[in-house]
Length: 521
Ligand code: FAD
Image (cartoon, rainbow, N blue to C red):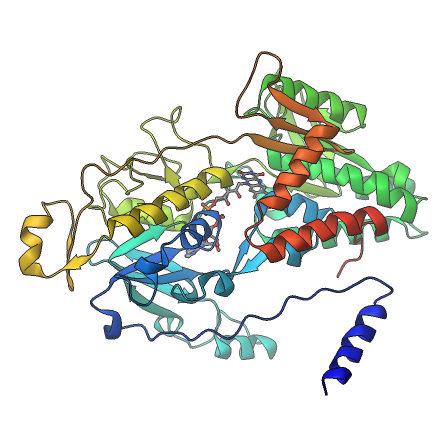
């Protein structure tokens, strides 16, 4: 009975090599409301994505508006059924935080708020307000694949993998993709760091490289090549990857692989003359000094022209060219437009959608040219009229945009009204839909305003930097140990659920007491 269960739990925990295992309780199975005519009189809000923007939106919704008795029906579509806390991806690569700690189930976050479909929007018809969604899983394809069959040759029609979903209001928060600038060889030879799969792949590869380099028949030259890590991109992601690699080598490789630790090298390449260019100049120079002091080779003012198997070809500002050998190359040079965003952009008037980075939105985050039925937030959205005034593609911006839209829709109660009543209300601002017209936003609605709360970066060796949101003549930034502590504390507190906060805090302690996870599981 109960005592038996408690004994089992206690023993299974105690027998984990004395390391406590804390598994969260599984959320109760949600009931999925049927999609279709039952909710026809509610305004259907479809959210695309389960990242920073989308999750901030669903977390801040007013339950009175989006709950059972409210005027909205919420549907979330994303190929990923979890939210990923991207700022700690470099720490997951370094094995400091575990992958489970930095994700939260989207079904837990959606509970009581709406329906979730695990699918990828593949097309949008803004005229008819209909989405085409591609399922993430097909049991027939999976079975064929497991039997060694080729996916390309199966006789499934495209329709069997897709379904249609109508919307009244669409929130596009699909993020962006990695920018490679069309440089030859990047896709084939580099690792990226955008998703959990990327982090897992990279962590396993590092573990394999270390194990391989430690084998007795590896020549010194091969060993040095295997253990040379090249990071391309001196922004926060590239810097943090290099910093986590440095810590990994200094604290764990030195102890667990003493014979090869000396052969590890870390090189960071960037086209600009300093690291962390969007940060205060004090931080830029501090980051450079810290890296040089830690023996990280900086190749600044250097442009990558091609990536080949095991070697990056570079061109220096002065025209000099050479190559940097690598065993592992991480590509972290920023983001490019998501294919779905590019497709939607083509369906909207070209004279109002002129950005090459994403969808231009107005001051209420409505996509320009979409007649007010599509909102866009996060990395997919471009605010402002020129690149200089556009907000940066950060989690902080996406989060505040999600909060704003949740308040806007919850309070304004954009609703469907009968076609007869719609004539006066929809003064040409909204498109006609099958179930009625959308009441447009009142003119007095407050526009979106962004408040910068500072920028953080971890630099390795228990040093970090924080660009303070309010600068005084005496204090503009926090650097060094204090910067690292500010980074660690805020990254823990900013987790999207108490479960994640607890697990991340636990991981910091676990890693400092027991070391990192260097296994390739
Ligand atoms: P994402 O969070 O990228 O979410 C996009 C979502 O859309 C995902 O759930 C994806 O599965 C889904 N999706 C994709 N395609 C489709 C489709 N066709 N249909 C439906 N759904 C789809 N920012 C900071 O402010 N501070 C940091 O410290 C920081 N560190 C970072 C570290 C790393 C390694 C990375 C990669 C990014 C970091 N960022 C940081 C940037 C931050 O992660 C992004 O700005 C933020 O994730 C943008 O949020 P989003 O909602 O637009 O997109």
